[in-house]
Length: 140
Image 1 (cartoon, rainbow, N blue to C red):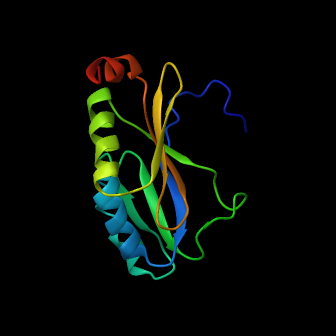
Image 2: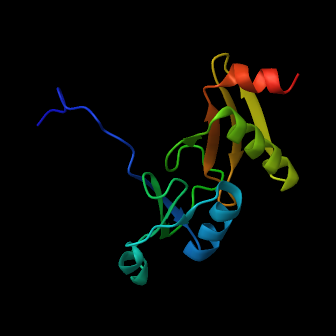
Image 3: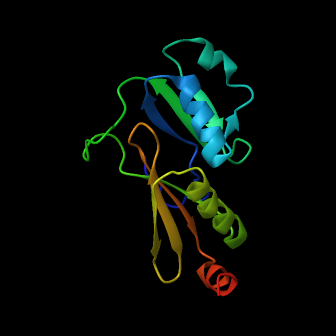
């Protein structure tokens, strides 16, 4: 079966291995504003199932499974999960990482700005905005 001619695909979830699902959910709530996904509690009740969180009301989700995280192994797991924010949201988020003491690096991609950082388990994360000109104007 081919996806040719089918449109409207969106990202549903990314699965992450973590040593403690609840601790991961707390970190992602603090740093990215993720909340538990309603209706997914039955999966989390199973110790081998996912604990689902979302930064956008459940449109996109992270699924935490108990297991060995990526850590410092560059070729393990996925390479990076990127989230998108408006210019104002991105500026507040980048400032919040500094306030929380989370090591991060900002890269200007011309038409986009991205801030790169890792979660406590070594998963690479990115928050980007395609409203780079607006961010630049507001910082000058």
